Amino acid sequence: MKKLLIIGLVLLILAPALFADDAKVMPAKVGRFYVAPIYSFVPGTYDDDGRRYDFPDGPIKLFNLGFAVEYGINDWITAAMQWVPGVTLWSDLEDATGIKEANMNGLADLFAGVKMQIIGANAPVQSEKVRFAVAPGVIIPLPGVDFEEEFKNMSEEKAATVANMDNHVFAAGGRFYFDYVFNNNFFINFHNETIFYLNNRELNKQSPDLAGFKAKVGEGIPDLAAGLGATGYTGADLAESLAALDGEVNYRSNITFEIEPVFTTSLKDGIVLNAGIPINYQFSPASKYEMNGSFRNDLNDAKKHVDNLIAQGAPLEQLAGGLAGIEEGYDNTFSDLDSHTLRIGPNLSVFFMKLPLPLEFKFQYNVPVWGRNTNAQHGAIFQIRAYFKFKNKDVQEE
Image 1: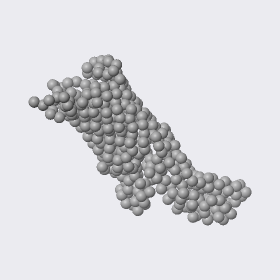
Image 2 (image 1 turned 45 degrees about the vertical axis):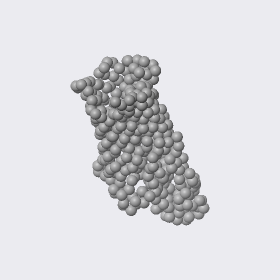
Image 3 (image 1 turned 90 degrees about the vertical axis):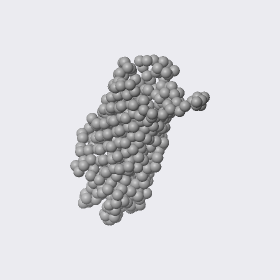
Image 4 (image 1 turned 120 degrees about the vertical axis):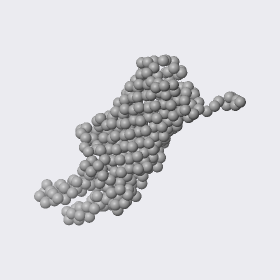
């Protein structure tokens, strides 16, 4: 079950890379609308030592559709609402997980923010060589998955959603952009995004892990109870405390750094070509689990009782092994490790400025380079950007 948590990061780790962007802002009264089809596949994962392991039966595959809108309030402030990744319309996790008809369809969370260019040609601090912008924002959670219900579907070999597309909790933070402009055709962009999650997520809404742990341990509880009863152990009923087991997870934060050289040129009048090769690093500290109930204490009491009897010569090694297995499963299920991701994402865009509705087409392909406790995720992203402008109220039509 633990690998389902890593699988759930498929779209989450993609989000900062999609909108790393540069320090430019929209002109006053000009906006743009994005549509972003995304195809992603994950052939395997990286372990805690950075070694890659491919799924033996096939990759994770998914198709997502995202949207965004940005609007220039004035020449140095842009408001933005971004839902990229947006909604996963199709996904196939059956080969990678071994779970029949498994998917991760659903909604990602929404980002809303304001981008302010502090240094730039039209910014409060004017410069032609340097651009610097900050973008405070919030993440607004959208509905996730009821994993208690989905685990029932898994158990009955029905189609089931086995991973969330996002964390689905409120978050706040900021994006920081710095460009150094060498000339009209070349600049280098430095980008950082730092997000802090503001509240915890219930475990049964995070993943199927809690339901899976209860089901697996619950199958062996009758035999364990019988074995413990034969030793005269009178501790709390493990079955009762297992049923009451619950908890929350604190996602803490998510930090991204990126550097991207960008080349731009005019192909002909009104047509602009842009190309870039961003190098993107993302870090997520280990989530913190806050468990409720007495199950862990009851399990420790039972283990100590059995260990004491074994020390006195009782042949209870099999019973001790069963309790130790439950302890190991508990610790592995309700714990986490830091996650690191390094990728490159070469991209190419063409901007048709003189169309009745100016359009920009951008293609980006993200390639994993290295990671720890994360996915080896490939992503093909196609962005269609339509530009629009509102007329000033004081302009009179002839």
